[in-house]
Amino acid sequence: MTIIPVIISGGAGTRLWPASREAFPKPLLKLADGESLLQKTFRRATLFRGVGEVVVVTNRETYFLTRDECQAVNPDQIPLGFVLEPVGRNTTGAIATAASWVRTHHGSDAIMLVLPADHLIDDLDRFQLAVEAAAEAATQGRIVTFGIRPTAPETGYGYIQFEHDGGAAATVHPVVRFVEKPKREVAEALVAGGAHLWNSGMFCFTAGSILEELEALAPELLAACEQSVSAGSISTNNGCRSLELHAGHFKEVQDISIDYAVMEKSKRVSVVPSDMGWSDVGSWNSLSELVVPDALGNRIQGDAMLHDVTNCYIKSDARVIGAVGIDNLIIVDTPDALLVANRECTQDVKHIVGQLKTKGHESYKIHRTAHRPWGTYTILEEGERFKIKRIVVKPGAQLSLQMHHHRSEHWIVVCGSAEVVNGEQAIALQPNQSTYIPAGHKHRLINPGVIDLVLIEVQCGEYLGEDDIVRFEDSYGRA
Image (cartoon, rainbow, N blue to C red; front, side, top):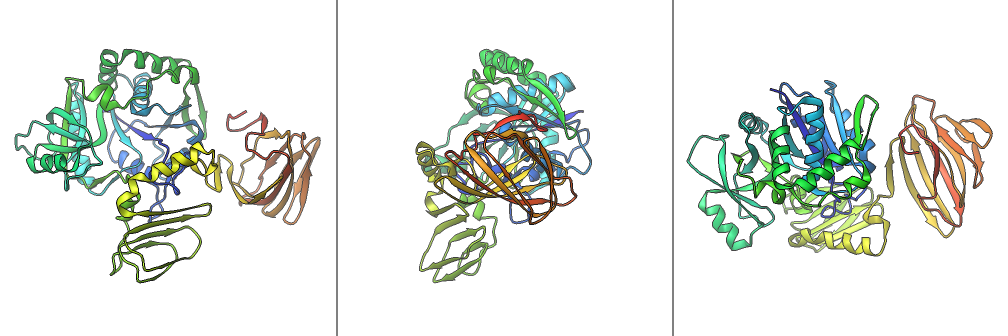
């Protein structure tokens, strides 16, 4: 039995802003133990024998960071494949393109275990039992979803009604219907009845079965997905295969969830009920529950000084936070944004992100520290006609050979060694040495050493946007 885990890693990160951004989505957030949600998902996806490949569907812009996260927790060198979306098109587009990839490389009978990258599961033994039951049903042509036995009348989850026969745990049951996120009184009745489960958003089926259902229930969507796959480009980088979907065809894919497109219509859907300690970590309220509270119910990550504070979650990346006389608040501080919210309103953080996006404020999309395939840059200060960055280049990595129309740059090496292409010159720089790059000069930065290269970059010019880059050559396929 060949199992191919398919990890769906995307989203705009609106409910966990300001820690999560469009260019640094929720699956990449680090938890208290130092592992990201994506890494935890990868670990449990590879618990099973016969895993032929792990396929990750993610946005093209987050590919290199996503790849690095997976490789860091892949000591057994399980093959990695990436399906890279040019734009987000919800779970149906992601699953359809992944199924096409799996069928091509592993056959129609390969079992796909579809896992969102931003969930937590505490009981891995029960998770494994549920997957084994689902995989067996998948070999018989069933489209299987995983239902979580509810512990409270949650209004933020969808529900699954199933044919409840009192059987053993981790057995497969036919699905009666799906219920949208209910109002409080409806949720209380569903939980009390015992025949409804939380909809986890995890699935198991063969590649052939899900493609058959998509052909029957969403043929136009499937056709656009398959065109985007066949017209896409496959490459191998750092030992990983990646498929970059064709942007023109993929933009034609309908933006719809797999629940709406297939699950609510198919006659082949079954569910495995489980008590696996599942959480979708969907808000700051749920994320705060992962931190042990003090005697007054406060949960603290970072440096905070409290006086007369109760039932608060306070997270600081760097600065000290002082709090006096407050109750039931969420406070999240990052270098460029601060969130203060009532615990009861954390689902509404997305409205702040919407306002930022409407106004064109870049904090909806990127952090002050931005990740690139070669390393990171951090904006230290900026003003009219200038910007100062701290740039870190990983050992052996290099920036693209590029040019800027509207700005000049001054590079000062702080740590490590640098090889610089500056116009017609090739320069070697050591700490406390620098070079000036006028606007219009082709240039490139290389770290030839075995430690990080750290430098300060001072930009000056009439326009300092990140889109003022003309790439001529690039090791990461961005030229």
